[in-house]
Image 1 (spheres, rainbow, N blue to C red):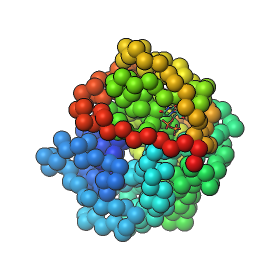
Image 2: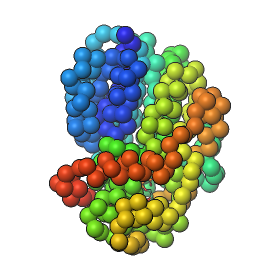
Image 3: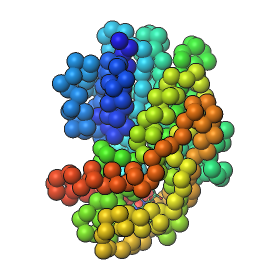
Length: 324
Ligand code: UDP
């Protein structure tokens, strides 16, 4: 049985990856320090003999006994509300944490896939974003702690690949959504659906003309799985190229939830990227991958998930700080 270590296992993406690798017949070791992850996301796995969980911070030395075939490094705060609150942990997990993960992989002879992000492109001047674009990132702005940590992570991963011949994979993940997203993580989709369910107006930042491209989580997981098993060590974008303005997105959520409220405009946070759309030619060519789930289908599943949460969860709201 192949053994895979998944860091950030209790998070949104990590928990879906645990499910997928269990389904594929792997032995899964999940690791999380639970700063932003939630054990509820993986509690259904605890009864399985193919699953074990380590409550551990990967920024500290990692010890895992026995063989490891693959490591997926998905531990990191990933929403602006989180990394504004815990910027130092955000920097540490993708720098020190990545170093520990790569060191462990070297000792075990394991292949590593690290979760990078479209944020490495910053507020992009190239549209749609191709992997060979180097980006436009403000290192000292509010997103700097996340963007630069992920850029460092990519550089360190390539260095281990080149200097030690380690088998490495780098995925650049674009906005992804689905069940198990935290309702209060401040990102636009849970924010809008939460507001619709609570009977509040939807808080659109700026005039809503900024764009994003939303990928359903099952499509993303399929892309990750294919990239891990491929032999491609340079970064690959995975995301859904279907681009939409935040204003249109808010209108879609109002329609879906049949909410009677309206969109209201709040100030645009500093360094908020104006446009984002993945160029997925490389994923198509190398992995034979492209997204299958339409936004209409994905949003319906995600809305049903949020509706099933308790009113306690629904009312735990955190507000974003602006222009810091
Ligand atoms: N946004 C918004 N209202 C909210 C939360 C976010 O209009 O309540 C906007 C935000 O300014 C950004 C987009 O939605 O332009 C996506 O934000 P998110 O935090 O989800 O992720 P990002 O892609 O910016 O990292």
